[in-house]
Amino acid sequence: MKQTLVIAEAGVNHNGSLEMAFKLVDAAVDAGADIVKFQTFKAKNLVTADAGKAQYQIETTGNQESQLAMLTRLELSYDAHHQLLEYCASKNIEFLSTAFDSESLAFLVNDIKVKRLKIPSGELTNSPFVLAHACSGLDIILSTGMATLEEVKNALSAIAFGYISPLDMSPSLANFELVFQSDEGQKVLSDKVTILHCTTEYPAPFDEINLNAMDTLKQSFGLPVGYSDHSQGIAIPIAAVAKEAVIIEKHFTLDCSLPGPDHRASIEPLQLKMMVQSIRQVEKALGNGVKKPTISEAKNITIARKSIVAQRDIKQGEPFNVSNLTIKRPGTGMSPDLFWQLISGQVASKSYLVGDLIDE
Image (cartoon, rainbow, N blue to C red; front, top):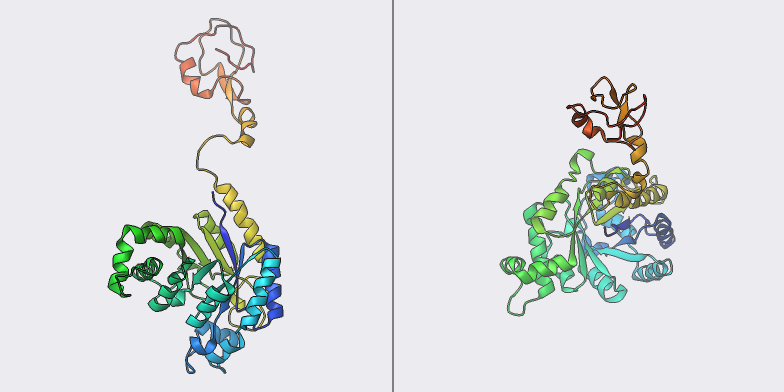
């Protein structure tokens, strides 16, 4: 089984501090994550001046400032991105960031030269932006929080079109659909796209997580499926791995009590480490699906199983019956499966003392 890709989502939990961002990288490395992910945006390109906050943001940061003001405080400069990239390289962990506007996307692709791109749930219906991601040619992770199957299909259609970039077609929903339905479109999606199931609430209620939707996504689109988690604790992402999630993304912070919009719905470094360790254990436990005794089980077969045993002394030529036979450990003699064969008229070929294993 291919190892699950674990993305430690630092997001904006650095609170605008490069020093704190470095510490988040250290925590992700110590936890054993494969990727540490941040968020790249210019607040002025992302929201209008009068855009309101989400309810969870109001609960965690108050309602005195606008969403624009809050996000402006959480921006990381382009120079900070380059320093983070170098720091991640020195720590042997992949740097990734989610772009939330076109300028930021171009920066990540052309300047930072990220290995892959992540399209967040909130941008899934932003077809021009989705298309721009695909036009980069990079592999894409598509998060699907808040989305219907039809909306996921529309996003995948735009992605397929962007990858292929047919010269005889202009961008349109109709042409996206044509490319999506083509063999070439399906092939490029299969090669380059992973879908993440997600519930976009912070924290996500357990009864709204619906991990079985991972199966629906897999059956509907035939693409690798992972899970982006916003639930409290680590049980749900571990369960998602048991459902064969190929990617797990989980928000983490240095301290859940820090001020900021996402800390409360994140896990702390020790939990992140426990999550990664548990994921690796589950991966091993899933196995290959073949039902047969394992290497470690083999030595226990004769100890745990039973054999047919003489319940009392049995003379040679005496018929076997329910009163002179019993079944006990160890399992080194005749299998209890042969019990009915013995009592159906078979006689003892030799004498047995009480407790002897029957050997016929």
